[in-house]
Image (cartoon, rainbow, N blue to C red; front, side, top):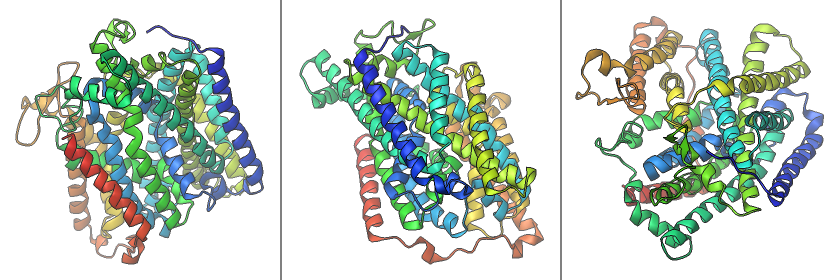
Length: 557
């Protein structure tokens, strides 16, 4: 795909974004630096983030290159159905706010391994800490950097390596200021992210309107729905080529819940934003994030569908190719290159903001887990608060440097960036979520059961993928399978997560019941019904989101 370049006005718009974010971050840092020697303040911004800062930071950390590039690419290929990840996340956030947050905050949980240590034992906690560090660095941080640099390089014409290093340096500067700087600069990042994303969507729909007659975004939206009706179905049938990626009703009642609940409720770099707040503030912040999540498909999915219709009509024939093959992940960069001078700079800033904010959030969580769960517990138990903050900053730099070194070799496959991330994290998600949900709500769950689910869940995830090919049974009452790129029959990864989660839960129940210690488990959590009491405003906001979801899925079924 041919690279384009930015004009002077584009660079000025981008410079404005850079100065605003950096200047505001520096101001926040200087305002709060008297407390920066406190590790809780550095890692959690304890008690200082408002509900709107928490909500904005959640979205800024979540929306990155894999959404802008990867989800738009999936919108190009499969249409609105990929928005399930965004809309189901909104429903998931409500569950996390209602049930998960009270448990974390009542037990003064700062990290996810800390919860596992308190609920189970240090072995489970240490294994999970190492798992998370490897996953966050080798898959998440690296893929964010790779996809982001690829997009920025394509749009600006700058060298890929230069883009990686520049964005990494920017992310490091923000991260070294601690969670306060990240949280409050994320508010500005989200403003640029949303504005730039909406501008791209607006102009994409306007281009569709011009191409097929008429004017205005509503006319463009009408053209999309009438000329590409196959891209406006939320639930796929088995005969749909995209069924393996989004297997039918599993996106509503199956494995999609495991993906989202594990990501939003048991994920350090997501929950960390709310762990330093009181319960009402944390819940309102998460509710705000849910509302923002509802609008994300407008920004990250519609451009991909617009690019598909334009490509189908004969545009972008060369631009959508990569190494002689149609590349869906080129859809968003192709549209950005059509933006007029100035607006292209705004969208460029939005994409950069998404990458940098997500990298900063991920690096901070890597630093938090390494410092509080590994360094403090196993390397230097007597470390002072100042030492912990220093080690945290070193961990930020080290993790980012590792990501820069391995990103060019990550080899995202033909599934595209977003699906790549979902499938690889999906090997861990069922077992991890089983650990948490059983630890929350069943006192008799033992450490032995947790350890089996953790190791057995990952093992069974890998094994179950190829059961159809190994057994020769490619379709049964228990599963349906489909050939992958190598011709091997595999079970769709969302379905696999459902089966693996069921396996983990069943195993944990059996192992715990066979263990005499489970009858009086001293590590079982005390759950008080009053913990889950909701405020009227939260109830109203939640009802609005649920009604919106019901309306969307009913209309686009």
